[in-house]
Length: 321
Image (cartoon, rainbow, N blue to C red):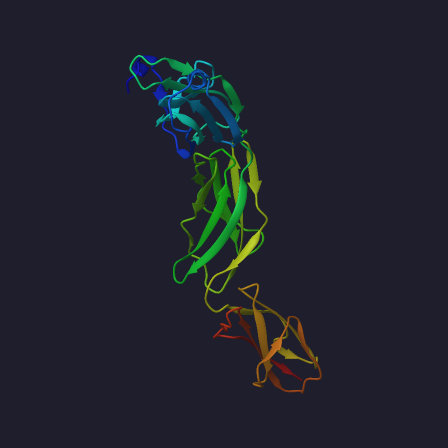
């Protein structure tokens, strides 16, 4: 690398670095004494924003000669790591907007800018002042969004967004056909990226019944805490299945009948009919008064939000004496 830097023994960190350069050149012409003094003045670092695993900062330099600059950092004034360069700039005033990522949450770091003036092997090294910052401590994870996608004949895929808040986060899903749930997916790990964020896509919950409402929740945990989301539902594709849960059967002397019914899809609506009449919208429970003394047949079918109708309506036959 030249300029005597090999002897320093600093390890270059394997980090994600985002750099934006704003350069304002000094006016042309011979360097003045004031410019020469500016080239030896300590370059300044200013911290702009600190996150769980990253810091945004900028370096300001005014130089009469061409210079080379980079950053040293570490958890003590021994530094030990370097990043962000080296950048070579011509004489003038400039500002480097920099980001250092891949840091440890809740940790205090020391940082300084290093500059070589003149770009000659014997050029003096100028160390800027020490600057400290502390990354944000990791926090309990957050659940950002979800989207359920049903693949006919296969599975339900829950695509979810997880905010890891600086720490690797485990996640699994509890699910079932009632709010008691009862089943769980395998646990996955959402790794915090260099900036403390992360996401996962569940590979899919298979062996689900079509036309059925499932309840589910996500359970997340990291080193800073945990989160269990509120229960939500999703409907698998396909026509719902209808069932009659209460009502007369066999023979009865009562001339009215009340039926209760439901469907595998909890968001379904219903259509009912008595003795072969036209289908009409209905709700459970449904009562038929003043029935004739005869044999009767009640039928009900569920309809989902996509207007898919149960092709095998539930039915009950009974006789009124």
